[in-house]
Image 1: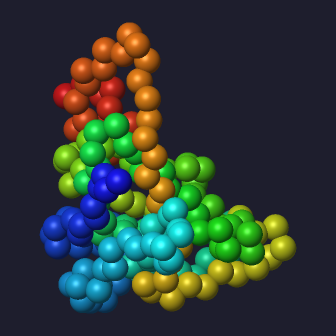
Image 2: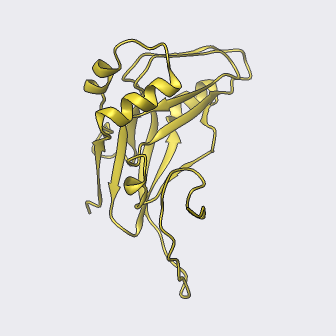
Length: 169
């Protein structure tokens, strides 16, 4: 069953967000052109690999905010869950700061174009420094259906990203 698609956010959105996270980075326009849409590595893979748009060099306990340049267009009744790539979690305790990222189907229509960010930490307990080249897989996303309670009456409208669902204008 095909229930979603990935696309890039606009060039302007990505460059503005990239400059917030990395103000000294050269060639943001070139980085935008080279954004890789999430892909499954094999026919049996459940997860879609998300790739870093910048090189990563993290000492133990350091955190990075990665603008992916990606948004997900998801059918109602499904959610995209984001997890760190298994091998990086196993070797470095590289983890998403919010444990599991939850991308709702209405997030693509948020004011930020549904731009998916990954805030990740090298939580190594053994002193390992983490180095990842640009355009390497750092996280994986899995689409899952979800259910509603019989008395569900949600009518809220999303305006932004984190914490915006219940915020009043």
